[in-house]
Image 1 (cartoon, helix red, strand yellow):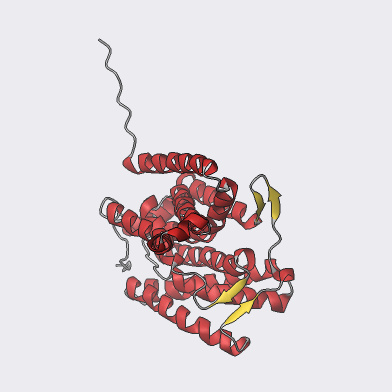
Image 2 (tube, rainbow, N blue to C red):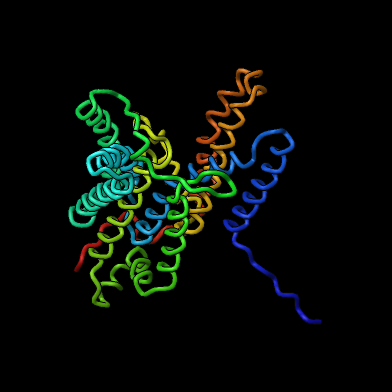
Length: 332
């Protein structure tokens, strides 16, 4: 008898597939409940965008052996610098570029500390988070003498009409970036060097390539993408700057990285799943039925943050991170 070939489907891919099928089923059921499925999907895409940008950049960074957990701090700082750049330069696009530049500078500083200063990367990342939280409020009081600032419409990124309604073009940019970086990581010589720098940096050194330069490049790239996501908060989505504008989404982006196993396309999918959870929770909260049960509103507010905790608890022990992850390379 001819043996039947067994098809092995990675557990992570299976979980993603089941999650996406569940989302489709939920959207179908919401339509019967009278809740706008288009509005839920549209909200999910807006939430997804900064998560995807930061997570995809961090996937590349961690593939090279560096771990930057300071995404929350980058979000906070670039949200305000993006608006400041937009106002000073008179363009929302310029504001996004300013935010991305500030993110790249933060990534560069993190790289200097981690690659050349051999600092503890977790401590350095937490330092960025603490610095960002304190500096945001200081800058707001210094620049605007207020704890909140409304962005004028002429500085917001113009949205485009789609079957789901008005969407920011940055949503499609984030999707394109994830696809491009996936191709670079797995189909180019640069991607081989990045992966080797995380798995076996001494082999990269023997081949005549500079491990420090590769890691500095990924630090700057990851910071720039997180910075673009931070500027998107204020210029492409919320239209305001407040002290808790990112609301912990930098840590949710890290959950996307773990969930995705450092794969850019899976990180994009994870960002959409988390974005859908948040969009669904807030959409249900706006219905009259949600206010009939006092405890339900509190649970729905917690739901977008419970999901990442559950995901990290399930997957963080199952993922084999690069062997040199978090360790500075000392050239002999």
